[in-house]
Image (cartoon, rainbow over all chains, first blue to last red):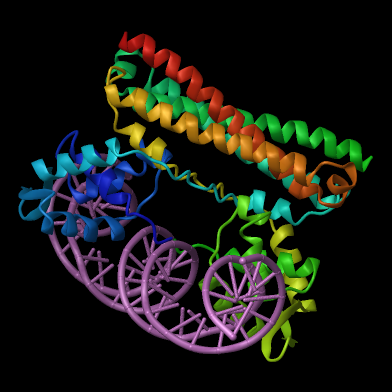
Length: 184
Length: 184
DNA sequence: GCTTAACATGTAATTAATTACATGTATATA
DNA sequence: TATATACATGTAATTAATTACATGTTAAGC
């Protein structure tokens, strides 16, 4: 998708919290931010180079052990300004959700199609697992109130994600009932 | 995004209902399927060429008026088989929703951040409008029961989309209340 | 008869993103 | 001390998708 390069803002946002290496940034997509966005290191390293060329970040070289060099990136004033602008400017385009299962459903014409029940069951399994995972994240990450106070946005979107998955699971259950009735 | 080329299946799915031109296919993204997926004609025409090379579709040339040639595409047996396989094979990867607003929220640290209320209000306006639009689609497209019976999958996903937006709107309202309380 | 909007089909340039290729270091553990 | 895993950083090839470029026809309204 040729979209508006949101990765740059994620990098700026993460570096705004503390200096990180490219490797650290890559790892952060396995955890927190990874629940909401994905990126690989092959995308991150070139982006870091571009951001540094533009003056939004700088780096200092650290040496671990004998000779392993790592680059610790810092955000600059230009970078913090760009991050602030991105958050402030408004988000008037609703990102269309591209859900492959939903797309497949579009081409199912009859409520008696035997594949329908199979597909719904699979999605129910997947979304139930996802919901369990998200609830687990909620309790581990936001177990105490100080965490919520210090990362309020993160708390909100995790809570939003839990609600969204709950809705999805309930919809699947409800639809399965209706479908089974139609097929009986 | 280098993903699994879902456009080919949308084209096959639409051609499975009736023969269409590239222009017709492009237009269909302004309506029905457009609620759930997007594609431009610059993506559609090359894809049609590839599908024909692969033997999944064929075309016949129609002439409108004096000399305007249009290509009416038909699905082949290979195409219907490919479509059937895609629907049948299972959808084990949950597509991660990339919502820019959600992403921005991640970088809001404090519940007292004055931008929070502004951002939530904007999203409430957008998602309320979206919800109204979807409900309108529901009544116009699925006004009578025969439409539901003949396009059950489409009915399901539209109903799912209405529910999803309802949840989003409610979540925004609820969060706004909480945030205003925190900022007071 | 003129003009505009819709019909109709393509290609080119650019950007975003994934997968694969490529290399080397440090640390923990068996 | 060997070995596996995690740390660390890049590039190349490919695919997907958007935006822009490019051209011509038909039908409706004035």
